[in-house]
Image (cartoon, rainbow, N blue to C red; front, side, top):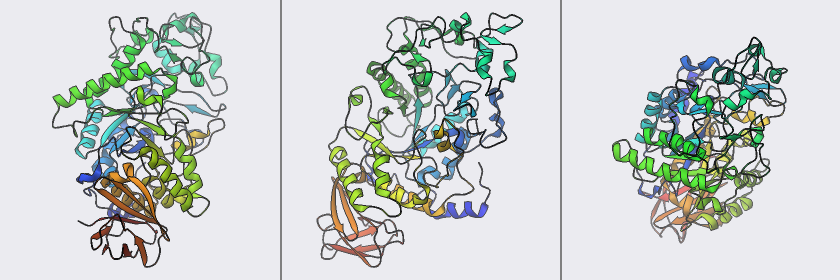
Length: 568
């Protein structure tokens, strides 16, 4: 996960100034209006501290196809290193969404069609919400990462899950649910479980043993095991992917889960008259109160009732306000706690989720429409303009909500890497908020695609030794332009030219004109946007020109994109 090609590394570092003054511009807009979010699977980004790589006895596999679901070494120290190098700031990023860093299931479960050992490297198999997972690093490293991000005007968002914990894996069960013991069993595990393989894994688990009640406990989850309620048939009570379902809707007070009572290092404590929801909200927002986490990306929103999300938002808002009051020199600003969420299939329109505490939602519609715009070899500018016009009608000011559009995702697919430059154009000029998936900017290739779980291929290691330098330069240029101009996110959209295709976005005093597929000595129509005789600057090349006859004559970069803004 380190640069192996030093010449390439030097070329990339020189491509854009390390700390361009992206956030100093008054027309950047608020974060809520103009979020530029970098989503990173921390484990797959950069290994900053190899000493934590085999925490809890986790091991890698020698063959790449078998290694797809293991922990690969990325950690908070690696993220901090790239922050210090300016990687995120050079992209114009104003928030980093990291996979859940709290402690995950220690062992592996059977992945795909008995195809790979599936560990919780992605953060979706929670074990202890009160402890940092050792593979991610230490609490001092988390604090250093957050402080370094804040110093650059970049917020930190945690991925959080309130719908389910992790599966019952052999190793975790052996550590915390190991009673009673006989010569043949420890808890629900048969002797010899340490030698389990993908083929015989489940034969070492007695799913009818009463010891299961000492796992999370029947008061906490639906699991369909002995002593537990079966999962329901609706979104709120079903067991998503057979995972145990938290009873967040339940009003009954509960004690600590039995498993955590047997976990010596947990910070979880009994809460008086607390429900499952109360515990989860308390645990998750303690990270906000202790470290200044700026917001959450909530997983599986439709599988948790709105009251739980409202409770999480309220507690998160109070926790961040308290942290900022205690740490005035470590905060970015006084903006409130922010939440976005994943509701599978959600588009750019407003939904009831925005009444349940969410400021923003992940936009699944964009990826599908962007694929049509990109086509097989050339941008379809007619489809591009319709996409932008449709979104701007919904999301331009004074819209009171926002979405995050994306091209690639850990749960769907990566955009076609041969189209890295055009893909960056389509995403980074879109109305609303945008989400960059780690490696979109470098054309990170797919990893192995195991049978029964092809999405694992989207979570390959960051391609530090094979970065597409041209793509990276393009994404950086557009990202910094976007970070300076809230008009791209919240402005009224209008097509102003056909040859080349050009559009304007205007939000209050912030105005831009963008041309795509421009070539030769282009003349860009800017009448009605920039005044006659005024000077404009092409942020792509740095060239300046004066408006004459409602047009600007400019020689575009070979990539065909012109980014016009008022000249300083």
